[in-house]
Each structure stands twice: as C-alpha cells, then as structure tokens.
Image 1: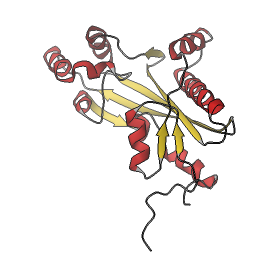
Image 2 (image 1 turned 180 degrees about the vertical axis):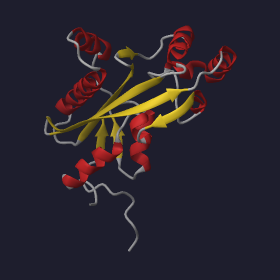
Image 3 (image 1 turned 30 degrees about the vertical axis):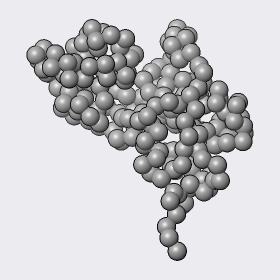
Image 4 (image 1 turned 120 degrees about the vertical axis):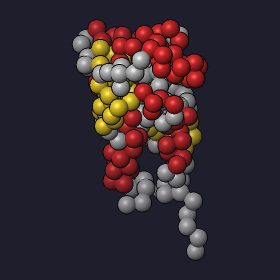
Length: 208
C-alpha cells in the first residue's frame, strides 16, 4: 500500500484566509491540502482602532487574524479555515509594511543594532465559529550594519522590501541583516505551525 499524499484527514482541503504565498507554502510543505481565499477586511482601520484603545502588538495580531478568519468563515461555514497575522514591534512601537524604499530605509535604520519582536497569531474557524486562537512571539536582533551595506541591501532587494512588515524576508536576502534570532522558524514567517498542528491533532484533523 502506498503512502498517502497528505496527512490531512478531512475530506475538504483546509482554507487559508490569506493571499500570502509564504503561509501557503508552509502548509503545502507539511502535506496539508490547502486553498487560499483572501479576506475582505480593512486591516489598517482595525489596527488604528485597536491602538487607540491601548491594545498591545500581540493583541493586535490576534484581532487582525480573527477579523480575516471571521470574514472567510461566514462565506464558508462548512469548511475548516485558518487565518494568521503578524505585527512587528520595537518595545511597544509598532511598525507597518513600508510604502516606499525611503520608508524602508528609515525603518531599517531604526531597527539596526536593536532587538525587535515579531508577534504571529493564528486562529481556526469551523461552522462560522472560532475554535482555536494562539499567538507566538519571536525575538530578532539586527546587527549594527553600516549605511553602505544598507544601500546595497535596499538595491538588491528592490520592491521586495515593501512586501513585509519588517522590510525583510529573513528566509532569503534579509538574513544578512541579523546577528541573532530566537523563535520558531514558522512563527518568524508569520504562521506558528507547532501550536496549530497540536490543535489539529486534538481535533482529529491530522494523524496523531
């Protein structure tokens, strides 16, 4: 008898409430069949409202993931759905995806030589209800690189620096920015897999 092509026990594929290719690949790489459906939520508006109430960066990450998951769950009540979000904070100052190369430069100048936090949240919905929520935090220390290196990095990265909250993809060129990384790799990439898989096993969705 041949080995099954995946470890997912549910008949229908998992839905990822996101268009993130990184999160999609993380799930595909662990043999979970998944389809991506983007959520129709105004993330910046939700984030601004939460920050006015004094919400922490980790609380913001969870709330954004919930908003995405709830939106897609309402349209797919009979499917298992996960959603994730990530915030980057230097102490309590929260950063966003830089809109321009100039803003990416400013952001990296602020982060260099310091330790920042990536807060990655994941939630799971079924039947229109949230069944699981979790947030993990990773600590990343940027080295004190010089201005010449920064310009070389920005030139090599191009528009990719505008595609992530930290102005880097640590799984590729961005690794050159760092001295030390503390945290699970999937958490750093924005989808904490270990707690999610523990929930899936408990729910009977993957092989235990």
